Length: 118
Image (cartoon, rainbow, N blue to C red; front, side, top):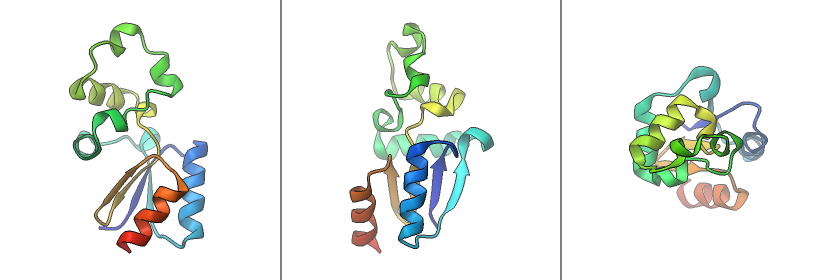
């Protein structure tokens, strides 16, 4: 399986990740989950591997604007439901494939992931 970069096209962090991958000559497919949606099984797989706490973007505006009742009592099932309803709450980018799953973008983490497993 090749690499897929999941996220939202207009996101600045996504642009940094795409630029980094292009600069390293890394081929990938891009999936805009805001425009194309996201399958529950993919989101549940990410949460199982990385933890829903990592996948849920609590720092973003979408999460911050939620009513307190929606934020209260968060668990994996509730977090997945929120992220499926509003994909902007998924931390970006998600890079998956070739035996790796990376949530978020930091150049040093990408560099380590590609030098240690390439």
